[in-house]
Amino acid sequence: MKRKKWLVGLALVIAVGLVGCQAKKETKEKTTKTKETQVRPKIEKVIKGETFTYHVMKPDEVFGATAVLVEKNGKGLLVDTQFSKENAEDIVAYIKEKQITLDTLYISYSDPDFYFGTAVIKEAFPDAKVLATASTIKRIKETNEAKQAVWQETLQDNAPDRILLPELAPSALTLDSDTLQIVGSDEEKQTLYQPTDKILLGGILVAADSHLFMADTKTRESQEQWLKDLEELTTFGATRVIPNHFASGNDFSPENIAFTKEYLERFMLSEATYTTSEEIIQDMKAAYPNLPDDSLEMSAKVVTGEMDWE
Image (tube, rainbow, N blue to C red; front, side, top):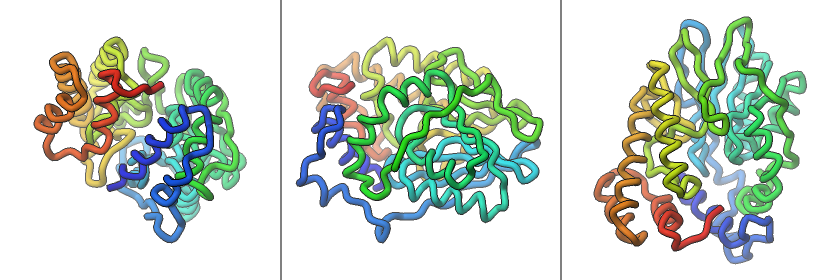
C-alpha cells in the first residue's frame, strides 16, 4: 500500500530525531524508490464548476497527498506540488499537455508533500508566482532543512535540489478575474474556498480513506481546535470537498469533512478511555475495520507518551 513507504520514512524521522542526521544504512534497501518502480501519478478526476475547472491529481505513492490544478480560459493556478520531483515533473507535463499557462502556485500547508516540488514547477513556469500564507511560509523556513535531511534517503534523486520560499499571499487568489478565498479563522490551518462552485480544497484539515495521522495533533487542545476548524468548514455549505490526502476513488463530497470529524471524535474517546497504545489500536481497528492502518500504531504510541514526536 502506498503508505508503507511513508511509515518507513516516519521511522527515519524518529531515528534521526528530526535534526537531519544521516539515515541508518540498513533502511536504504527498504526505502529506496527508483524511477523504474515509481508509479507515475495521473489525474484522479476533473471537476467542472461554474467558475473554474479543477484537475485533481491522483494521490502520490508515498503520502497519498494530492495537488489540484485550477483552470479557467487556459490560465492555471496550482494548489500544492505533491512530494517528489517526479510528482512535480508529471504535473508540469500535464499542464503543458493541456496548454495551460500557469499564473500561480499556491502552497496550502508546510508539510513536505505539499511543497517539495516547488522548484521543479517554478523552473518550468518561471513567470508563475509562488504564494502561501504567513504561517506556512514561517514553518517551511523553520523546518525545511530537517525535512530534507529526513526524507533524502527515501527520495534520493527525487529529493528537491533546493527549497523556494513562497511570497505572502493576499486574502484571496485571483485567476482570470475570479477568485479563490483563503478561509478559516485558524490562521495556521487555512483552506481554499470558491463560493460559486461551492468547493473546498487545499490545507491540512480534511483527510479521508485511512486512519488519521494523530501524532501531529497529540494534545487535547490541538484536537479540540481541529474539531472547531472542521465545524467552521461546514458553515460554507460546500458541495465538493477535496481532501488533502485520500485514496483513489474518493467522491469529493462533504462527507469527507464528516468522516474527518467523526474519526477525530472517536479517536479522542478511545484516547480518554484507554491508557496504552495497544488498547487504542485494538479499539480503533474495531471501530474502523476497513481502513488502512499503517499510521495507527504510531499515532497511538505518540498520544499515550510511549513514543516521542515533535
